[in-house]
Length: 287
Image 1 (cartoon, rainbow, N blue to C red):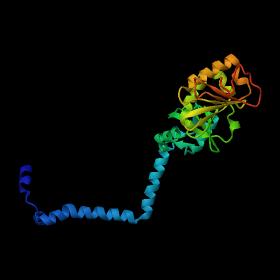
Image 2: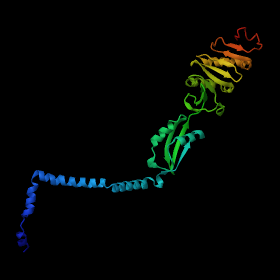
Image 3: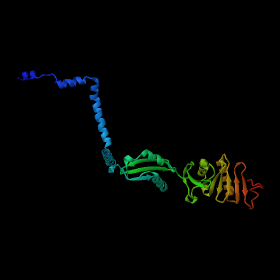
């Protein structure tokens, strides 16, 4: 019986199906049905979505809320910045410059940009920034060491032993222990003064200022207003000879105005209007 029923079913398509199949054999109609209608449907749906402003705003609001719900989770929030290795003055300067308003999400931080900002501060030699446990932005700073006060015209600047600028000095009183260097381009030659001071630590407390003369040599002004004129070359040797002369005859403790060491083999002194021992100086003031 089952075989008879199956044998009575006509496998041929109906007339409607047959005509549709014949129409689909036409290339243009087949292209319209397979690409045209789906494209039109997608275009109409997209157009309707953009026309409906409220729907678009709602979608944007939902996306924003989902993002905030994720990035502002407590475990992703940075609550405070910790600055190590710097003075209080530099730490306050870093906090003022950093464009951060805590608490801030980890995903809103640009560590590379913050690193660039901190390293561009003149007083910073190097800096490393990382995020540590507990939501702390850790900033480790290597600060430049102030070595001199450089006065040019009416502006005083704090510089390190290489002459690199650190900050503007509002008053000489703020840095009473730093030596004063004066003159054009004096900051470019302070390494010479550093070597002189390292060799004569006990002497630096008696120097009021190091004056750069003609961008080529140094004059030293002592606390008793004596000016020591050093040569352009081999100034360390000239200064060492001056120290030996001072130990032998207490030269620097006398009433002198100038000590000219520009000719190391023939030092010259200029005295104030006081009596001078003729055994130690001749009429020209030569030693």
